[in-house]
Length: 179
Image (cartoon, rainbow, N blue to C red; front, side, top):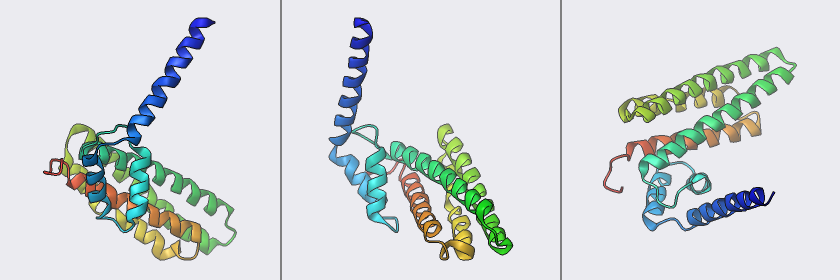
């Protein structure tokens, strides 16, 4: 029993110390984050996402790109769930067909980012960027058919675009002199 309490206390101390260290990120990491976020349509959202998901006090563009790719994949998956739920609950067939367009586009987007993440893991940054660069069009297609009619979907589309821009910006900076 005493061993378990000591073990749990050790884990708690570890997590508290890790989170405290991340709060004290080095200035160069913040410069990198600022540089990435300056290339997006929503600087503040970008700052929030990167700072919230930063897991180490010192992060180069590879680590920041990894965060961007992961967050884009997670958010895209959540948006697909929202679209499928909305489609299932929609009574109007025309609206359901429009949700199908969004569902299809976001499905392709998810595949693109899965491929980009795989390329990133192999260190093939050129292929990663190829998968990312044109992916915003799938969000635009959804927005063009439905996004402005539903506030929540419009917000999700806007958020997804920022995540794609973050992934593209950080990926293009891997190996740059700002490292």
